Image 1: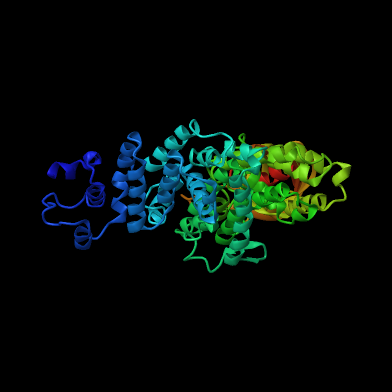
Image 2 (image 1 turned 180 degrees about the vertical axis):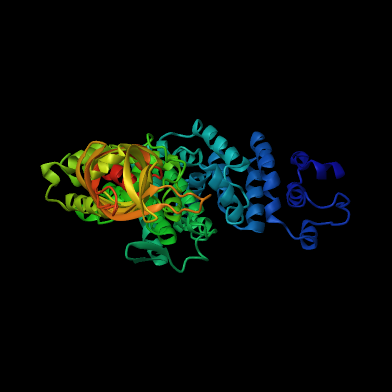
Length: 617
């Protein structure tokens, strides 16, 4: 008898099936337990409570053995005991239906709402089980409601294989055959049969379609609509009891919202939507996207998803293209453009929090929505807004921007929105830091000092229309080619020393954009200082300093590189008023040719210019 406790399936050969059932439920009792201590099954049940979570440990192995022996009577008793102690869960109901199909005891009078409730619950299980990650989460969170049978586990595999074997024994033109298709996890084949004659006239097919409408009507009891946002209402305790009302969005909301981290939520939501999209379950996608928006706000993936859902329903219009469209477009292009190096890191343009929220979904999510957009694009005429936006979301970004310049969109809100976005982009200022180096050629009285190199540092702000910066610079200190006179310590001295330092503000106006090149005009004002005599520290003689206002104007050619870096060649005319009283007059000016290099990449302007296809990109 002790050996039977260790190997419960040996009892199958015993005629006393009650002993087998007791052993099924009490396989975890101490091995010291003997049947002499408990004379009847009821005595044992009173002494030790049944643990429903322990039953699945042996259900699969025992069911397989009974099935091999075609012992359908024992299978039915096993199902009855399982339900008696743990309630009627979906796995229990599935085992009962398959047993009835196997022993030919299933008849069409059994087709009712209860059967279809559990059929839909099984379909929901299979939908979740397609994702390994979600299957593990649901099996943990909702294990009791799932009959303590993990999703995609041994029991699911056993019943699926059993149903597949039944298909060869059942009449293909019968309701039992359609039911076996469901449990064989053949949803596509089931849908094909449901759509054609004579299968669509079968009692199961008619009841299945009617049940779908009944479910939608009953579901209205548990939801309200506020501004098109779906919210579960008064349904927390009845969701799993009313299995036909258990749709994945209700489960998903409780599962996904277990964390306050919206980045984690977005990953979970996007993975679910990929699963639903492959199943073409657009109703669940719409409900889930509303829950996603309610928990994370309107981010780019949800914004794009809303447009695709509207197209799928045939309800997309120009009104759906609002003022935020081009802002979200920036995130979209960043995500799908494989030529951009920012896929795995945040470009400077995007703030940390906003980038993380908008970039939390998977690459698989983007690819699935691109494929969806390609399918939608074929449904609409080329001159329609839906076709244009679907082309954009399918990855044809250049086609989209080219179409914006066509006559068909010139008077549309889309075109005006584009112009507003361009204007907004042009007006955005951002900081930059650069340096320039070159040489100057003096003219006027200042020509006496000769040509010399210059170095400048630039700190400023810039946008697509103009820039303004503080320039600090000067010449390298070296000897001049010609001597000149200066008054120093009340004495007129001949010297060959000259150094120059200036600080001022320059304003640059962008005159013309073409491809990656920009032609600009500039002007500036500041103050300059010259040193005409070196400081002699040994003899405690101070340097001779002179100051003068300085003004300049010029022209430049700027070329942009990747990510907003730029190089500019500028020619500038500077004018000074150094009188050098008592000595040689140094008033005049100089022509400066310099090469300007941007050291810190501009944040806003390059990324936004790339997205909006502004002139110069």
